[in-house]
Length: 219
Length: 239
Ligand SMILES: Nc1ncnc2c1ncn2[C@@H]1O[C@H](COP(=O)(O)OP(=O)(O)OP(=O)(O)O)[C@@H](O)[C@H]1O
Ligand SMILES: [Mg+2]
Image (tube, rainbow over all chains, first blue to last red; front, side, top):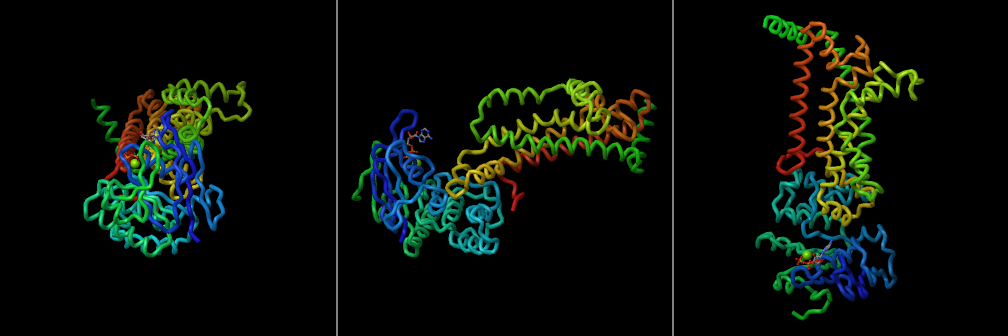
């Protein structure tokens, strides 16, 4: 079965300032968890800690498969991924950006071509395949980031404000992609958004961060 | 006035006729400076990357030394390499003085700090989000470092071009350690110096024109690379 993620009393401090405090949660596999909260309350930090980019100062981040905790190693890291709020587009073609994760995993050229081609269709960037990725618009870059993450077929996918500063049309495209993922795959999605309506549309579980603490949220 | 005009006319004749002596001198210049540059890259790029990506003890001091090295006067380097390679010097047994090998060593010392420093700067200036992107996409530490370095590639190449500009135009070091021996260690700059001394302007002007052209070419490549490092060019250099 899928990966489940458990936080137990996770705390994170930057320069003596407490950002996250005693955050505990069980993220059930296959569901979409939406995280809300005011600016600067630690949502992105929580996602980075969950995605194993940074270690917590206190508490534990546990990934479990069939009830057994997994080592937090590269093998596990390659089963999860995070769409960063500002994507981090590589200075190369759109194709190479999306192929990156597959290349470093040692996939064969033909398989990479096929998978990247298919995912670019999904995000509507197929015609931009050979274009320099830095020339994409903000909305296109977000879709590129989404494709780069989705092509890896992650078991846990973190999305940090996937539709921030994106127009209506692009937001709808991105939401549709997320909904399709929910229907088809068994991926656990953990996303941050400032849009309450979007949280309602996409979230199976709603969470709120306030003053570094994590709460369940009803609406 | 007449001599100068005469000089230019003969110079262009030499260039158009692809005069063998001229070609030989140009070819040696390319070989010596090219070899120095390649060696500088082999050592300078990893060092620059290491200083940019890892916590290295004494990093500040090392960077200061390297930056000082960027401004080394060629004659001082020439003197240093001369003393090193002269018969009584510590490396005298290698019998490299007055050979192209000695010239490569001298030019290497001149270009190494430039390549290292500009590689370091280019890699340090890569947006930190690139490193995070590599991590979240599953890069191991080596792949992550290579990704950041690759993102800095235009800046790194700019460093190489800047270094090449410096060594091809340099005369002080190569003349001291190469000796300007006809057909053996005579490069463009040393030939210009010598032939001008002898009042023999044809070859000097021909080489001067070529050197200027080379310098122009280097500048054009330099600017193109800087443009590619930013956005907006449509060209993809790696696949
Ligand atoms: N690497 C860091 N070093 C120091 N402080 C940091 C770092 N990253 C985040 N912070 C601080 O931690 C706090 C929480 O930041 P975070 O980015 O997690 O907030 P957020 O909830 O995602 O906000 P937003 O809604 O604006 O994206 C902020 O005060 C920020 O300044
Ligand atoms: Mg944030």
